[in-house]
Length: 452
Image 1 (cartoon, rainbow, N blue to C red):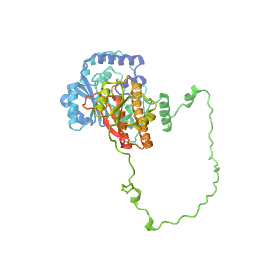
Image 2 (image 1 turned 90 degrees about the horizontal axis):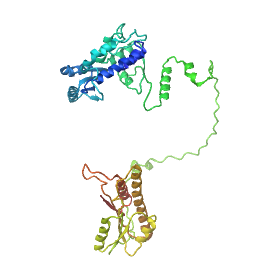
Image 3 (image 1 turned 180 degrees about the vertical axis):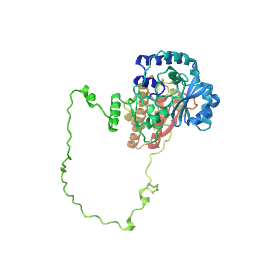
Image 4 (image 1 turned 90 degrees about the vertical axis):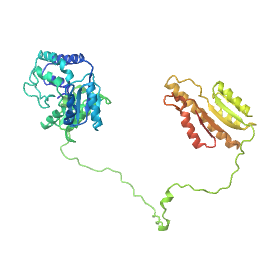
């Protein structure tokens, strides 16, 4: 059994026509369909056939049922505007639909212009009765004698719906309980499984896109063998050289245990149980916030008088302007480009100077150009976060050793946060915001804030 154009393959394998004639017929079908206007569409409707036919009745001249793939899986096909109107109506009434990606509206009234010419080509082929039982897409039943050997049948096949659900049911009624899909990926077995009661049949794939082809075939072969299929193991092993056949014993195995005997473990006397009044309450298992009075410790004196500021930034006019603004307020500014290798020692020197280090402004990536590739982006993200990490560690270490007040750290970025919906973000600076929030939680005395 095939599905739509798959029936051409099934008919060829069943001996209805030769491979050459099958290729001639399918090529003519494709050529004629491609000559039609691209004004059609197809959609899957997840409802039963009666509901779908009622919905398309008003559009009968332009839309028809193209396939019945399951009890509640029907495909409609026809003029694109009409198909869209039908799906909109069904969705408004709570019925799910899905548009299909197709070039033309197959099995629909839009195929009518090519039917005569296609039948003439089909009439030029040589047909024979199928040597294997062939299930028809047109009737959904086993093909009757003389049915698929007529050109008129293949004309009808182009135009009428694919009775896939009925065909699967017919195979099951005939005693078929194993279904193998031949194709690059399993599509039909998923639909076929829903045509029968749950848990009925074995559904196997020949290939899967995400799995190596030979492994998938072996897996399906193993499933077939477990279901009782007869496998030509000699043919299977033929390409692997001579194999050694082992004969299994016909008698039950004589079993004897060979476990190591474990030495007995001696345990000490059990501790007496706690009296009832000593049993822990559930509340003791939980964290609780409690205030405990403690003796005040000597804190570093707050900043008094002029202080020093460290500005970590690339060469930019705003950097000097900021230093001038600080100088106008009696402060001094130390400018650093952010390329040091001795942050810890240098920060200790600044914090131990005549003027206390009042604040650090980190804006090293503010005026950087956009990254050229992913590697450049990764390098910039790591560079910015790494420098800030060294600053935080250096300041905390120096403050602990010198017993001095910790300066405030400010992180400044540009376009790391969206102001409007269409803003283009500087993704290389975005990690500083996540890192900054962590600094605020772990080093609250050091944290000044984030500014974009």
